[in-house]
Image (cartoon, rainbow, N blue to C red; front, side, top):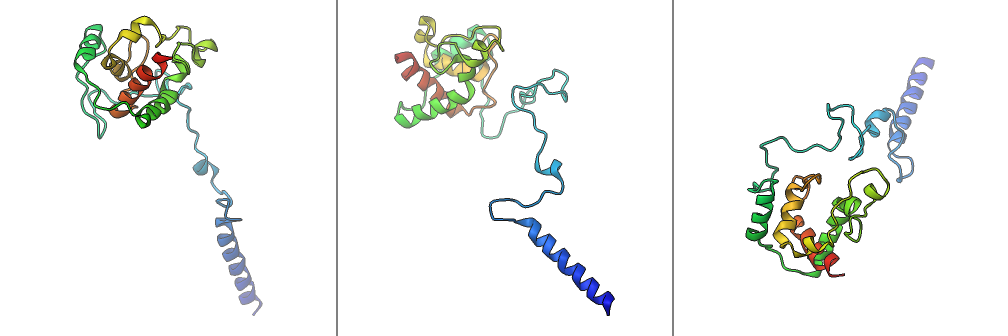
Length: 188
């Protein structure tokens, strides 16, 4: 008889522990039994990563692949193609407050660290000394006179030491960044 009562007590305690561990107060996921599954050891975007031979965390897509929902970009990272893109590419988007606001948002995620919030090339990575090359000022006369297609091209494939962002930023958002640069930063 004592054995059956002991089993019932153990079963009751097990049920309480199982259900109690799922949710303590509706603001918590409960107790963690396997912390490595709850908190992954992810690497930050610009930090060193020992898992790759080049030590970089941020990876480009595999050569020759095109992400789902993207179209192949027919221009290369050359001066000739940059000029050609400037002449041939036409922004399909209108200059609306919504498009410019989205352009500012994308700019602040991908561009602000190098080019700065004003676009003057004085972003945190350069001013902190973490990056030795001064980024291009988007306010210079040369960049001001560039067609919007060139800005789109540079965001897509990069320019000089600037890396490409075409694999990370959707084409529509690249146009919105170009709109933000042309309509807001360069008009201040």
